[in-house]
Amino acid sequence: MEPNRPRKVAILGAGPAGLTAGWELNKSGEEFKVTFFEGDSQVGGISKTVQWKGWRFDLGGHRFFSKSSRVNELWDEMLYPEVMLLRPRKSRIYYRGKFFDYPLKALNALRNLGLYETTRCISSYILVRINPPKDQTTFEGWVAARFGWRLYRIFFKTYTEKVWGIPTTQLQATWAAQRIKSLSLKTAILDAFGLSRKQKLTSLIDEFKYPSLGPGELWESTQKKLVDCGFLFHMSDLVSEVNKISDSYTIKSVSGRTVEADAVFSSIPLSEIPRILRAPINVREAAANLRFRDFLVVCIPVILDEVLFDDNWIYIHDSGVKVGRIQNYASWSPKMVVPGTSCLGMEYFVSKGDELWTSRDSDLIILAKQELQKLGLNTKFHEEGGYVVRVPNAYPVYDSNYQDNVMLIRNWLSANHPNWFQIGRNGQHRYNNQDHSMLTASLAVESLVNNSRLVDYWDVNLDDEYHEEASQTRDAPVFPRTS
Image (cartoon, rainbow, N blue to C red; front, top):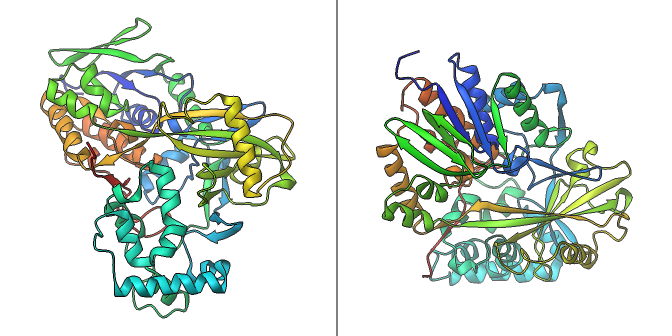
């Protein structure tokens, strides 16, 4: 080990990125003294598993599928492979009492819509080909031009506005182009009859790995193994202040702990870092302009025989209810539920401080049950009422200025804190899956250990495809600023 190689490392955040950083440091062959600070009482971040009265909840649904051999090897190391279940993949769209394939398949969609509605959709598509939307820089204009106004309103508008909380006219076309790529109603119909000349999109995965007790099982296993190797974990303890003296850091937490470190791996939201490090005012202003979308899950135990779908989750394209997605935890793993039951996770996309976020848990449970009945998806609830989990900072928002703000913070960190590594979803303000987050950490550790920046851990992009279907990058939508 070179004399200037850091030996004391602090890891801020014990989610997938932070724990992967610890794991890779332990594998490196170097001697590092590693201390974790985690604000929650359990590890895993948004990939943790919440437990309540015998049921387990996955926050958002985390399929263990990656095209990165590096990530797959890490999963096998962190959790014994035999603990992983191989689960069938199934998710559909629920609209007007019928299930539609996801992604949309022309024949299935048109069959479910019926002859009259199908005729209207095709007519709408023909009209939009004759008179396309003038502004296709927005999500609305871009999608309507490729599917027609009627199919756009049925399958795209409602769900997208639920997720991001703004009209689709304020959502830039970038996201649609990345998520839907070159698909249109015409190509979907040609594909259905095998007449398309274009290369077919990559097929959806049919199955995926999943820890039998939820994703938290993997991260809890990782924590235990790291503790056995001498790593320190300070749980329920947020970092309040960091001082840099020469090439080292003094880290202070809200509990009064003080830790010295030569290098820091942080998955704390990027928006918090300039404040913690006392950055110049322009850097702090850039951080203040980074925004997040939050969500909450209302978990409703139900009698298994009464669940009318076996999907892992379904998307709710119905403007008459507020729920956006519904998880069926028994379909993720039968070991996550009490025998004879399932648990439906009603997911609501919210913003901290809004009406749903501030509602009492008891009112949210009532709302969730009412919406399940309104949708006709379940009528027999378990005697236990329900459980609410709020998830702040779940989705980094990509507004029209976010790239400039992120780059300003990155450049400042690079110039002033070369041994400070921002990793993971919130750490980089990037809409990463857990395997992307793990890869940022793995590459960041490689950068530290090898004293090299040949591979930029900020630019993780596993390939040009989604995990499940061909598309461009895994980006959240871009919003224009309205103020």
